[in-house]
Image (tube, rainbow, N blue to C red; front, side, top):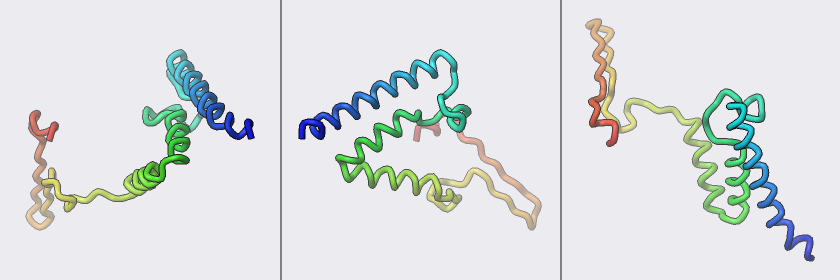
Length: 107
């Protein structure tokens, strides 16, 4: 029974140790540990481990992770509610490209 009680803190300790090792490796070499993660600057591998560890105890975290995965797959169309930045009229041969103003990026 004591082994089960110590398993979760031990797992959290291992995750923290691996996160520290990953951070140190990335600082010294400038690259990720795994070959398929070396070229990207997104979520580190240790963050994924912590999210899965949290999802064990919080059902809402599992829902959030599933929602994030769904959002990555979905397509973004001009009709999503934002004003269109480009309009192309093939009949008249006109293309209008609207560049955002510097103050509009915060909205």
